Length: 405
Image 1 (cartoon, helix red, strand yellow):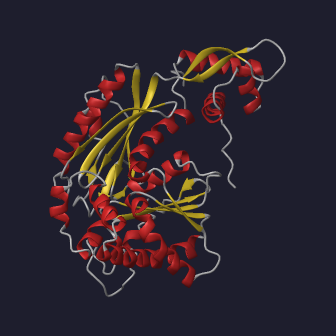
Image 2 (cartoon, helix red, strand yellow):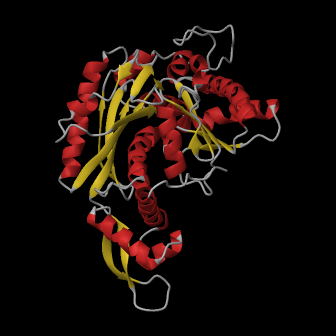
Image 3 (cartoon, one colour):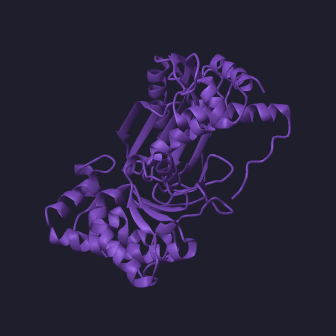
């Protein structure tokens, strides 16, 4: 187990203690100063000073008197502010764009999503449309007293570890694309809104950890999700395993049939070519482009497969069993290598889990012993967008912007 680095200066210690107070209220719920002091192990006097700074910055609010369980007069209950900073999350999908804003309490305060044919589109116009949606959401939450603390964008592709840059997205048809230009497009007062980006599977995995509702939440997880392609993220001790370049988790491009179909990544027989959304549609005799035109929007095509499977369509059931078996082959290798506590199916896979899982688990059982359980995400396709917005909120909680540095 790793430990947090020791603060080097008084300013570092103050920021660390401010973060401890915010996390105590965020994790344990509204509480008095005395209760917060008990949660984090600081004196009441020290906590009161920190609380005053957080109140002044609009990060905490006082809700009135309440009992903390201790003898004596009731203390004033502190809660996270429902105004002040908010986190903006955005998602660039193959066929849609979405933006949401989440306040410090974790509530979605505004959300917009539009159909958008982003595959093989130039990045500039797509980013311009996304900026319009961000401005729309920012305007809505601004009327409620919220101000963006940052923007994080979920992308279906390889994202640089040290910059908001898409290195490659085969499903979008994008090469090297910088996303920090979004800050200038948004027309913010000073043009300095922090912009970050991450792979959609990574953000979906973090959302599952933070919001998935699993008790207890597994910290060592292989999170597998799908839209057009298949992605995965690995959590070790609750932290993302990113790899040297930040590209860890590309399960969709693990070969399950080495002499199989050609893939957009340049390889052959990748899992994505047999268990990805478009591959399953084609195998079921459905034209992905036609289905997309008839049923636009995120999740609509998977919804069609789920409907047909639930109605007993034999072709769809056969195809999903085959896709589940291929998924099981890929999972066997990943689980054997990583030994996670759990495998979580998210995104489109969550909706198709009733028909994919039996074959996938059969392959796991056949190929290994003592395998982890396979959980189904309750967030489904919302995971990456929520993970993006909540990653901004977590950054605020970790380093509270009080105006003092």
